[in-house]
Length: 442
Image (cartoon, rainbow, N blue to C red; front, top):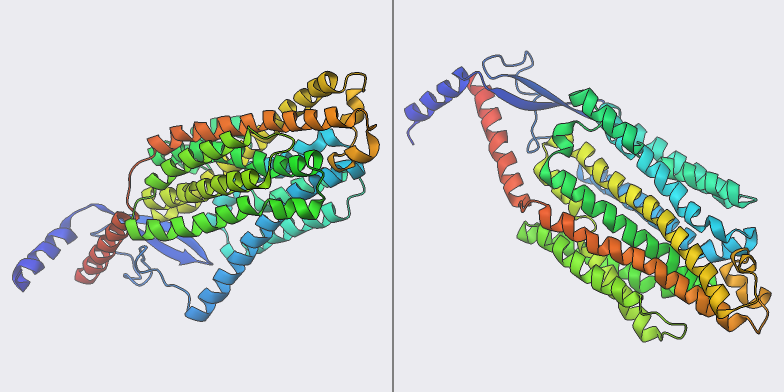
């Protein structure tokens, strides 16, 4: 193409009254602007950026930023696994087996309640200070949990920690979002995007399935098999390590192949099979089985766990990515909180029935008021085998709730769009070149 022809094309582009999406950075906040190409900003193109020409941090700063984010993710993961593993011992100390679901649900509910709001806050206010305040709230909640003298104080601490993790309450929120339109925390155009609403379904069901396992596998290890909290945590490692390793491999594979949808479908298959196998648990299930089943679930969960976030980053413009990501985390948290509560109801009902069936003559309230780790110290020896069997069956019934959630992820994984992250990168590169060239031509 000769220079005269190129010059003519540039002049044509400058005469078009189309809208160009540009971005400015102010106080650590990404701001979207729209203007006519025939009316360039007074500052020229220096303050106009696309996803390709944003000013990135230096290598040293990037290292510290990445390290900070990794440490925070580690803290959140450590919090969830520690609390889940310690719950059977906590129920023994506080004599509050009925509160098991609240230790998880209170955290997840406040996370859900403020997650979307934080997505908006991150877009409007300083990223750094918002992040630090959230970490402070999280640690304050953890401190309250650490010094809690009773079950109620522990639940309050978990709720404050969940606020630090963060999201907006559901029904009233949805109505208000539709009414407010573009001024809403989640503009309808974002949630009505196919990959966003289908990804939300997938995230909610994944959260429900996974959190039930995280909270009730330790109950099985400690209540049924009589292990202590430390051994129970060690025996949970196949699930956790499976998630970590599969997440890393899936991230690399998506970067190489471009497509994330196949990993979500594979996740649905593996997770459903793995959780289905957990429903075969007996009192004397050998280690070879519970290790393999957990590893299969962990791999399945890890393959798809982060893909909805990738989908949001792929299908949405840069300034909407924070909100889209918040929607996915919100969905996962709300799914976890709802199905943890449902699982607790199933567990309590099944445990009461099991005690009446296998330990006739024993008051079921004695069992529900006894922590999982104290069964062998409190229950009379003649009733103990029946109570342990009742515990096993109650946990298995809870696993069926997890199985239903795992199977339901198929809705989201099949409906989400087949988009390539590489196509998004190519599109962003083209837009960057066009905006820069047009600005110079003007």
